[in-house]
Image 1 (cartoon, helix red, strand yellow):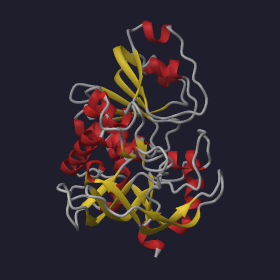
Image 2 (cartoon, rainbow, N blue to C red):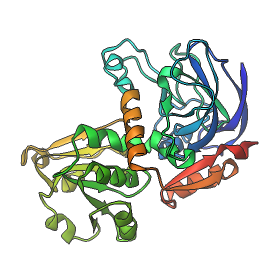
Image 3 (cartoon, helix red, strand yellow):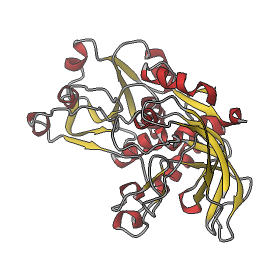
Length: 348
């Protein structure tokens, strides 16, 4: 076994605190990674506080992991010691179902093994995430980080990046398409950067005008405050694609009115409450309301390569792990532009 250390929540809503635990030693196809950075995702907070239910404790959160390979198993062919790598939201899947074979491991029929707050494929062993100094992952679930991307600012690509890239790619955002991003936070700011790089005309829809300058800097062509009553009448029927990154309850019917005929609104934020939808909001323009969940391994690597080509990273605030609990409170208050990343060297 490999001794590891990190920060964990002992019970729901408990402050994260130092925690020592064991990782498995490298099997034939395993890669041992010295973690250098780990992003803080809002889902880390939801799960550490058991706000979605079913949390497993003690919990070491973190699924936006970047680091360097320190050891490989005897049958590893994809990586070597010293490689810059990443680990995203899951570390294994059944590999046999229809979805796994199609490269859609995130939809594994028997359940992917989440990087933390999950179980290995034996359905017994708990998984521990990236707020730690080491992780051991099968080579088939490890991602290569492009050489030109710094590991700290690249870390959020492993969740926030793929969460936005996947629907933008699937619904074919690009030249000639008008795309709106609802919310300019950790997810939304990545959506603006990626949609802009894909060649789409990008609009940010935010509650107030506070972030307008940032939105334009990130690549938005237009910015509208949704608190202004004229916004929804002015933009009615404007967009081919809307990506909703907001986890708070919104009037989805109002946003559906902003779609063109045959337009789609894709939900990637997860409100705690159910959101009512009127049938006429959909049938009036043959509109679609859809959801998207991260991406498979191949698509995540595609996203990283795309970001390498276009020099896309996250806008981050680097913190020591000792400040993680303060960072959680600031995330809840939307007091970060736009993603916290933990410097794992601060564990030592």
